[in-house]
Image 1 (tube, rainbow, N blue to C red):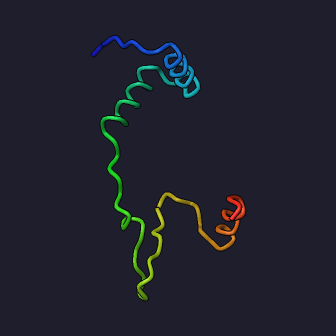
Image 2 (image 1 turned 90 degrees about the horizontal axis):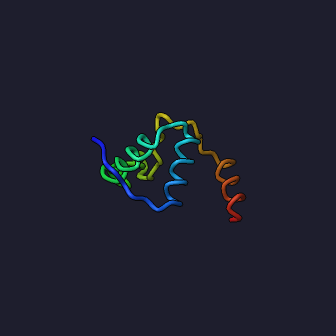
Length: 84
């Protein structure tokens, strides 16, 4: 379906530049933006990120696609980068 939109000039320029950087069309950029706005991904409940171990302690679940392994060194590096 075709339609006409009136956009502020600065927003159009930014959208066109973003589409060019991503090597996609404006149609694709606008379609993706509208889909995110109209069909947002449902938020996962906080319990989806944790499981309880045998002693009753909450443990973070590891996501299959995640390659980050959380160690004390990793946590200390994060603290240091945050100035904690």
